[in-house]
Amino acid sequence: MNQRINPLVWNDGVLRLVDQRYLPHTINYIDSKNLEDAHMAIKDMVVRGAPLIGFSALYGMALWLKGQTSLTSDSITQARKYLESARPTAVNLAYEASRAQKLIEASLSEGMKVADIYDRLVNFANQEMIKLGNDNLEMAKTAAKHLAELYGDRPLRLMTLCNTGFLACGPMGTALGVISHLNQLKRVEKVFAFETRPYLQGSRLTAFELCQENVPHQIVVEGAMSYLMRTQKIDAIFIGADRIVANGDTANKVGSSSLAIVASHYKVPFFVVAPVSSFDTSLESGDQIEVEMRDPKEILCLKEQRIAPNESDAFNPSFDITSAAHIEGIICENGLISPVTKSKLLSVVNL
Ligand code: MRU
Image (cartoon, rainbow, N blue to C red):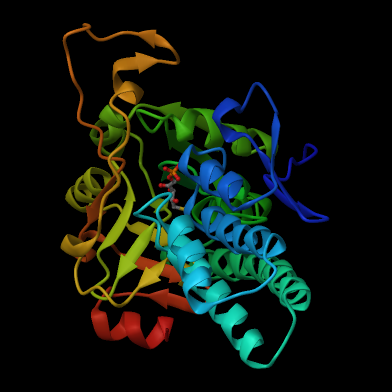
């Protein structure tokens, strides 16, 4: 394996992030030193991918604490909400910012000083980062076991969309963690990675991760998904999630829903892999999820070069909602949810 870059490092009160906007050809680092820096890094997609956005929020709350002399419930809530407003769809952001708020308030009520609460929050975030790595491995093992039941141990032909590896989801990744684990077990024949228009997380980031892990792969355009499923003997599809609600409906990168519908047409099993922090059981159905709308320029331009007519506008929903009915299984660190029903989901996730 090649030398890995680490997309998020906490070092002595500074959150150092790889600027993912310039990957794979340029590796730049950006330091966040306060709450505003962390907010900007999430909003502008220096750091992205649901779990890593969540961790940026945990450490972002620590950056905020560093600058405080006294704390009130209102000031903590204000900081949390400010971070949460950076991006709306990935629930991990709100989940981790809320966990930080709870930890700070509990510590306050124990009479702790701000400096000690800061240390406690940083330790908590560091421990949770280690846990995320262990959880990634659990998800990968669950998926490998299930695939062995379906296909034995023969090498598989897989598909994935967007980016769910170590740049987005912790040391191994979620959906891509499954793929790298299978590859280590010599159970991957080939991966088709969708380029993921318009922001190209697939061709820029997933392909970079697959190269680092020496996984045989080809990049494909989303428009080819039906042709590939018709002709390329695809065994399974793995994607991540930005928010999974109580009935199993899942928000993920735009294109996921079309992929699931086409997969169901060709009877290719479609799996979602995500940690418990990506579940939002306070919502009943995917219709209640706020979908982030991004700058039309992402569609109208390639890098800074305008490609569409100057008069044209674009509509740029960054996510879509896959109905539970099209999902074969959802895998989290607690196990496999299949069939995807509300009762099964609630019993496995146990939030
Ligand atoms: O807009 P992004 O790059 O943050 O979107 C990332 C994705 O949609 C991922 O597939 C998702 O967060 C699931 S797991 C990283």
